[in-house]
Image (tube, rainbow, N blue to C red; front, side, top):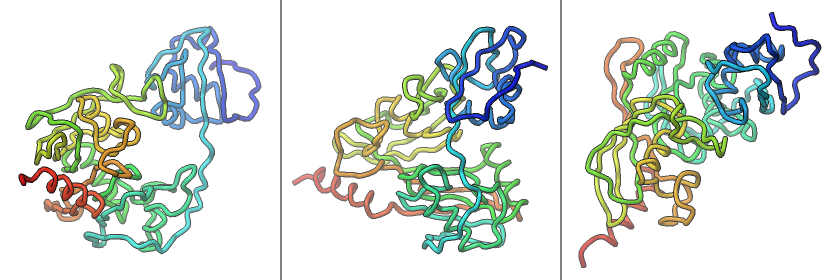
Length: 315
């Protein structure tokens, strides 16, 4: 066991210098030993979120540490686990005793986080399903998530058995998720983007294609073109943070309206990224039957397409 002496309570920003006797340890294990306030699982989450810098760079949890290297840890503000049910209207595409399929609007955060303690999908779900108590304290029933400004279909588990089955199905890549994305430019008719994704070493709030990132694979096909714009059907094989947005930018065709990965100048007066989870396919956790669900483009996105069709039509 490493002797690290007495430690003060963990502040928001912490620095630990690796002692000689810890050299060679995995960084997640070392942090759990060096900082009693952190469990190994918590250390792994902070590393995955890009909140741990080893010699000034983000790393994987398996990174071995070396004597004398400084590790900087950022601890986000604690999130209250006291969730409040709020009667927020939901567009429920399908529901039964095991699952619910929700068409999430753009602008809605999926689960509570710093800066968004209320008004989330989780708050709305607790009001509609008062007995919902699966999947953890701050994200009950949430099997996967969508970015705040991405609209479309989400699957919710309503009991523990459904949660286990859906998570296993997602990990085995048996779920089908197809998105519609409007991009700037005209990519080839079909393609696959196979590039690892991790925290951007220059900006921890962004993701990027990086050599030491997690494997990520995205398939796409062009549905329609409108001058310098293309509408794509995009299918995820993996589910990394911001995967579609990062991969399409990496390919050279950023999503219209994307404030983080798109061009700085506004496009088509859209206030959010043109990205919609329009198709969801899965095996029902109770009977094993394949089910498919669809959600049409919301008005803000369909109006953009109507505008493009109008200006692209021959006169």
